[in-house]
Image (cartoon, rainbow over all chains, first blue to last red; front, side, top):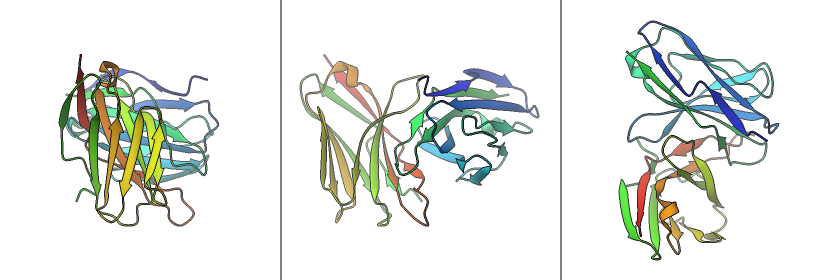
Length: 112
Length: 115
């Protein structure tokens, strides 16, 4: 199993541009999550999904959108990128009935 | 307001000795706690967890202790090895409304194990 995969690994965006961060998992997990980690800080939840077609906001959802059309994929969309969105983004997945989450390698995004 | 606090940003330990990483929480409804380990340029890796119905959970060199009355948990690594050098995150979860609860993370403690 590849686990949780994320693309791209790195990206530089100009202010106002848009992009989609891709996340896929092959563990048949129902739950998927997007986090951001700023320097010296813990991970903050952006959006999560409890299954295909169901998404909900986390702690810091502003400026982001998600969709979940399949169990495997959970893309994160940034519209009108701002410098405040410069961060490392982690996708995670978890099985139903368990609290453990399994993380991808992350995407380092810089907005200038 | 931080619900999960790791008050030590860094910890340095000699190889072979015990590493003790601490975590405090404020929400008494948290019922499950986890520790993650993170190497640079990688995603966090699940290490060990504990339910609030227990006060200790052990897995090899790693033991997590939970003191509910003090709202405090700690991760003990014995013996410490240079490969344990990483950032350790404490996370907590509250089960509610049929949801399995999202994770609230602390800011992390950077552990350096010196040969």
